[in-house]
Length: 258
Image (cartoon, rainbow, N blue to C red; front, top):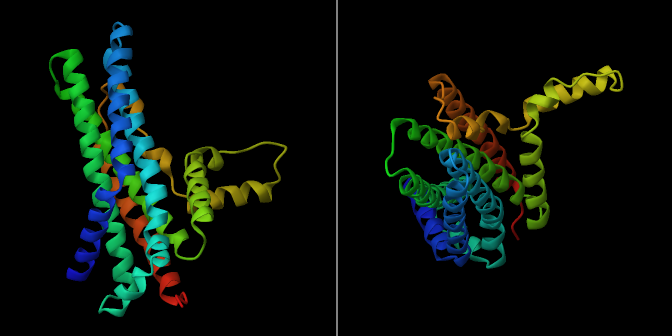
């Protein structure tokens, strides 16, 4: 665990030194400012507009960071040839991957926390107070982090055996597909053969179900999120990340790095 922690901490330090992170956070804070402006124009629905735009900015910025930086975690180490020196030390390949995953997840958590602070600052500026119903946005932010953890695991998986460009395309494709899992399961029609319907239904259970993590509408309207959904999403994200990371470790351990 100490070796995994060292790799995770070094990954976090490298990500913090990357100027892209600061640019993305600046863009997110700019979105918060735009949310305040739009919220003031939209009389009577200020909270809904600010929360919707703020959560949307957090999700989009986090997704960009998870995909592009997650794919570069392994390929950058190989291009700089620092991976060979690291693996020559008593660091196993699976420890390297887990450390990279933990380091990027820590980076995303801290940046998400900073952007969340901007969101609540915008809410306080407009409403001059924060009420208990505003805490629903924290659940939505937590679900965004769970979703980003799955995206990071997928990005690491694809970066273990393909080029960075293809890894980005594969990760983005799976993310988009995961937004329509419910539609795939309920897809019926005379134009589709029963075999195609059965295949799509089977495929929907393999794809990451990102629809369950989307509670932005409920957060914008201040509706409470069921505790059962929080437990289910947490367990689902943990299990899915474990499976994807196990597959990434199996592939990376057999890859010829010479």
